[in-house]
Amino acid sequence: MMMNLSTSISTPKLVTTISQMRVETSVTRRAGVKIGLVPTMGALHEGHLSLVRASKAECGLTVVSIFVNPTQFGPNEDFAKYPRTLDNDLKLLASCGADVAFAPEASEMYRPDRGATVDVGEVAEPLEGAFRPGHFRGVGTVVLKLFNIVQPDVAFFGQKDFQQVQVVRRMAADLNVPVDVRICPIVREPDGLAMSSRNRYLSPAARCRALVLSKSLKRAGELVQQGQRNAAVILAEMRSVIETAEDARIDYIALVDPETFRPVETVAGPTLAALAVKIENTRLIDNCLL
Ligand code: AMP
Image (cartoon, rainbow, N blue to C red; front, side, top):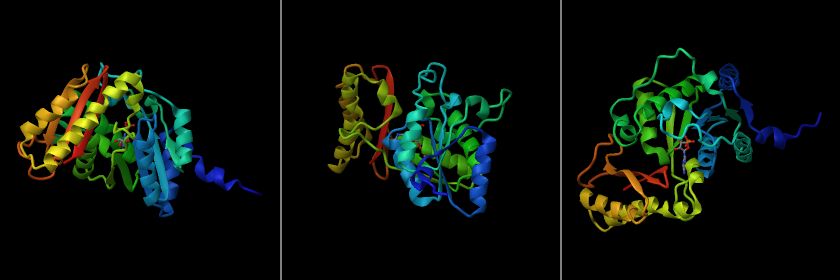
């Protein structure tokens, strides 16, 4: 019988139950094939696809999870309106050759009487942790669940959510989860805006004002290149760039140690410049390593 190979290779298999997901990966694992996992909340864009390509380059089987995780959203956040675009996501995944899309319902992932959660400790406290109480408990818990369900050899995360990667790394190291956690570069629009599923909330005018985030990080990089080491001076410059957008509301602008997330006073070693700013009520984050 003739097989249409191009279709069978490029269309990801849609899996919605944990038991079926375990079957998919256990067969592959027994065959000695390396398994890569790309956890996402869907509404996929080039940033997500770059992680899929990184997994494809390294692993024989690439699983992409698509799950808008309720436990990482605060009560006043955008869980209900978060974009859900499964059909389009599957097309995009087909275009880059993902093997399995794991898209469970919340009722499949969470038992009604659940109690256990993951508490990651100090790296989860400042910045995103301070402005989104409980966020990293939700992230740590769902990522550990995904690691236990898929049992990947390697998991791929974006630098866009730098603190999230460090939270996941700590969780995996401290709880002895045998997964290599890889961090992939931030994918940006040609004008510098970091790609994000939330960018689609922005009106065209707000989309323009949102460029202050990447501009402010660029300015920080320039200052450091020119020899500026005083964190207070760099932060003040970053703030003044952000404030050129009249409706910008700053959650934080920070220069921190990229391992501990403690603030630095002097840029002496590797330093993470990170910010979270609301533009037109849409909360955007961005960062760069100085
Ligand atoms: P999300 O769907 O927002 O939970 O993101 C899923 C994964 O994609 C996370 O590891 C993010 O850091 C990563 N990601 C999101 N946006 C980008 C981007 N612009 N560049 C690289 N990775 C990204």
